[in-house]
Image (tube, rainbow, N blue to C red; front, side, top):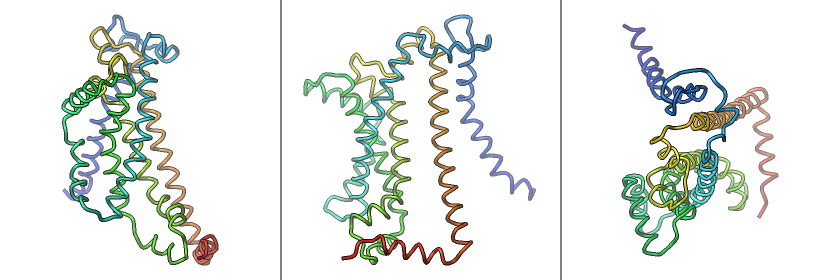
Length: 287
């Protein structure tokens, strides 16, 4: 019983991960399938046709690139605006701060069908033509909240004494932000950007309401499901998952190497810590 209690949490975690990755494994497996008919739902024959001719079906790569372009643009704007909002909410006190904190969560809790229909009514009343621009505006509006929450959590977990130490060493506010604040908050900003891109790329409901004649990748999959999703869709979905996995693993590996190098440097020679402090003092501008 003692062994079971000690391993129970690990076993449950492994089972949950297996449960989460089973659909992804099915999609990846079917990307190497050659179905008999137009429905790629059961295994028939191993084939690399979908990977060697990934744009063989008309509209697949076009809709995929449209979703990538919309995701990148909306992520850039949402990350910049959301980061500034997070800094304002954490570092400054102003009238309406509590109300702003509450309103930030509303787009996250509002059903997407309500937000999509509301944005469609807004664009129609303004006589704004539907297309990529309206999709980008809509995606920026609902991804900002996720960026703010992610960056805000990172800022609240930072030790303010690090910035105070930089100011004690006569660092200007710009130098403090560049050399201390931004490197510490950068992982949170990167995580918020990845989350925003995945939400934008994956969105269907809001995009469907405000797309007009533009066909994004989720909208293409929804339309193709009625007549049979081509195998190339499975290949592209697997490719996106592999790229996202490589980005996460690379960031974790870089962080691990930096942490190990820092620990090894400080443990090998105690004088390194003093040298680093002196180097920081020399780099900081004097008033």
